[in-house]
Length: 230
Image (spheres, rainbow, N blue to C red):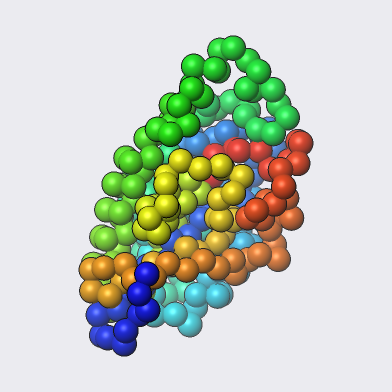
């Protein structure tokens, strides 16, 4: 992508993944209600709010799920803003929602699950990647319009964030989930010149709070870092 030129019409939209969730049973919670930030997750949210405090934030939006709303709260408070709930920022739908599904739990050895994993390109187990791109681009563009000439923060979930970033960077949408660069409480930052995305950046303001096995690119560990739904 081209370098950003100095202009009054430069708008920055930070797409943030929520903080750690309290989930002692290791459930793939997906879009289920009732999953809140853990104490560590709240610390992550506060850390990012501190990081963004000097920025020119004029719009804060979030997925309707509790973990996203709770992550957005300290950011909105720091800038004297209300949270704009946007359904387009919600987690991707997944047929394994409500179940355990992760490294070493044998989920892929169960015949009942095989029909859901036959097509990794769509994917067959959940919301099509193309549909995620459409709704996430809609949310990004709406935030860009709401914050034109300033900055916005949108709190969403790992898969939709990674998919829309892949689209913006012209990569294929199907991928190895273990290689997503989208750690808890991370910022994927889209810079617009007018209505065009001219750069995409990535940062981890709360990196020191994230357990090592959950960092982007970390090697999966049996019994840890399950794909809980982010």
